[in-house]
Every structure is written in C-alpha cells, then in structure tokens.
Image 1 (cartoon, rainbow, N blue to C red):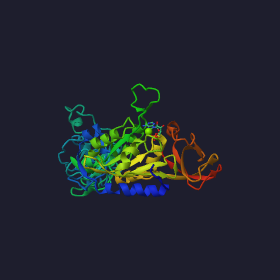
Image 2: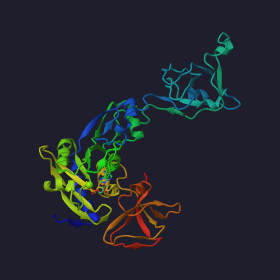
Image 3: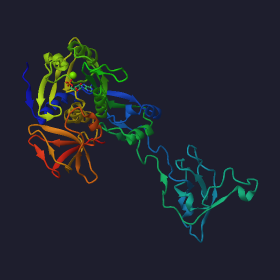
Image 4: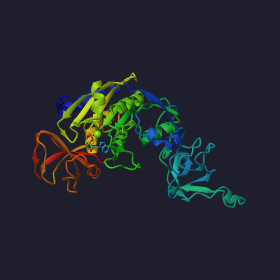
Length: 437
Ligand code: AMP
Ligand code: MG
C-alpha cells in the first residue's frame, strides 16, 4: 500500500500552479475568420477570446464625414446672423439618406440629411430637424411640384449652429494605421464590433486550451440510458465540462465507464495527443478499486491528501502517454460531484482563467457575518455552500457532505472555514467566494 502525502490547501495550490505554468508558453495562436454573419452564427467561437497580436486598423472610422442627427446639412456661415426676428431662410436641397452619395451643398441652401448619411461637400454643420421651421421634413416627392412656389420649399432657422455641430468627422473614432486593439485584449461585444466595423476579415487569437476530461466509474451511465440497480447518471462530465468552458477551455469529454485501468489508459492514448491537459474525476480514494490511481500511479502521478473537505484526495503530475509519445500534465479530482467542483474552484479555475487571459481570474471574495453558528473539522479547510440573506448574512445550504450537488446548485457563495477553526458563532465573519456570476 502506498503512503499518502498530506499537505495544506496552499501547498497543493502551488503544486498545481507550477504544474500548469508551462501551458502559458506552449499556447499557440490560431486564425479566426471574421465577418458579422460568422460572428452571429457562431458567437462562442469569438466571444471571450484573447487576441494573440495587435490589430492595426486598415481604415478610418467613421470612414467618411457624416451626420449625427436627422436634420439639415448647412454651411454655418449662412446661419451666422440668424435670430428669431430675422431667421435665415434657405432653399431646401435633395434629401440625403444613409448610404447615399451626396452632391456638394451650394451657399444659401440646406440639405435634409438623415443620421449616418454622408455630409455633402461644403457643409460644415447639421441643424437637428427639431430646431428647423417647419420642424418636420418636407414629404418626398415634394407636394405640388408643378407649382413653382412649392417646388422650391424654404426652411428657416432662428439661430446658427456651433461650428462642426452634429458632424461626425472621418477618422474621429479610429484612423487608418492606428492600433485598434492590442495583443492580450479580451474580445467582448464592443471589441468584436469595432473589429467588424473596420472590415478586418481575419484575427489571430490564442488557441483555447484543450482539456481531456475523463469522468470515471463502473457505476456511471449516460442519461437517457436505463439504470441498473447500483448505477447512477454521470453528473461530473457535465459539471466539469461546463466549468472548464467557463474558464476559457475547449473540452474533450470521454468518460471511462468502468474501473478498468486498461480502459482508462486506452482513452488517454486515443485522446491525449490532441489535448493540452488531462483532468480525471473519481477513482482516487482509498477504495479497493481506484481506477485512476491504478492506471496513473505507475506512470508517476502523485496522489496526495489535502487538508480540505470536501476534496481531500487529490492527484497531479505529468504523464508520458504510452505509445502516444505525448507528455502531458494531469490533475485528478475525487468523484463526488461537490468534491470535484470545489477542487476545480480551489486549484484549477484561477490558473486556467489566468492562462486564457480572462477577466477576474479569482472569485470575488467578501467577508460577511454568519447567520448561524457552524462547526468545522479543525484540521481541515472546509468549504461549505451558502447563500447571502438580504441583510448580508451568510446562510449555509445543505450539510457538509460531498454528494449534495442539489444544495450546491441552490447556492450563491462558497463559504470558507479555514484549518484551525472548529467552531464559529452566528455573527462571526467568514470569507465567501461569489459563485453566482
Ligand atoms: P470515487 O471518487 O470514484 O470513489 O467516487 C465517489 C463518489 O462519487 C461515489 O459515490 C460515486 O458514485 C460518485 N461519483 C463518481 N463519479 C460520478 C459522476 N460522474 N457523477 C456522479 N457521481 C459520481
Ligand atoms: Mg469511482
């Protein structure tokens, strides 16, 4: 029987950080084709990605001078002396709609112009329609165009616009050759929008880390298949693949529905060559049949006992895939779904989010008073699940048992009761991690 090493949460956190650190340098870039329709059809391929290189704008934004308002394009000098008693009266030109090309504006004339439409040459201000008399556009085509009076309608203004008022000049947001976004930028709606707006058709982003996720256990079955007595549906493949995606990874989920070490090794051989990291769930405790220990122990994976509850039995190391010729980091979690998810939160999530360049790699920590007294094993860092009352007090949800996934699902915080603490009273303060975002 192998001797199990004991260690603190902090020691294990450091071990996992060191294990995963080389993934930062092995990150490769990949090219993504960009267009509005591709992004709309496949939003998850773009959103939350991290730029691998700077993007230089190939164009000015806006690409041409245009109107910021529905109104009249004018030459400001024509309105310089306008007052309520002596309004400026200008002849109305043809209407300019967004997308039209505009003829130049002559002195003494005003062109009805719509928001985003190109400003005609010679115009240097836009007066909003609300400030014109009449304060509505003449209908198009103009009524009674056979009547000479009506054929040349007149619009009046009682005040002059400020120079450049409501004009959006070409390049006022971005100029051609400017650095549009720098390497490391996380792509969200505004970043992707400005890329699309410049007409860029391809960007380089960091390739997402590919995680081979192996949920193990003779008893686990895929939902949709009937369960024999003693069998359960596989929660862990779902819990962890969702958590990994949230941490910026791509997941290859390949459960090992047996406790046979040969089968687990077969899965690793088949799938590991395309992965950057292997995470296994289950099969690491002190039972008689522990498939992960049996398969990976001989390959050099360390199995340790972390002073944490849930999530005590942990493992980590690098494996050289037999016959695959690949050397990969492996992290092993215990199989109870709450243990697996708490382990992920404690040891892996912050590292992966940092590697992916995601915002807020660490959970937001709040220090809040307890709503009730709680006992905790003094030698262990206990992580409980809870909610926060409207008055800011922390209420525990469910007990400390690690099979209570439903209680986890009803929680909004992880409650930390560190090693050294055996009892806290109501109103004592605890650190909680927000998990509701
Ligand atoms: P293990 O770590 O393999 O000893 O599993 C510990 C407990 O977690 C056992 O009750 C398992 O049945 C349960 N378990 C293991 N894997 C899963 C899974 N994928 N989904 C739900 N429960 C699981
Ligand atoms: Mg098992």
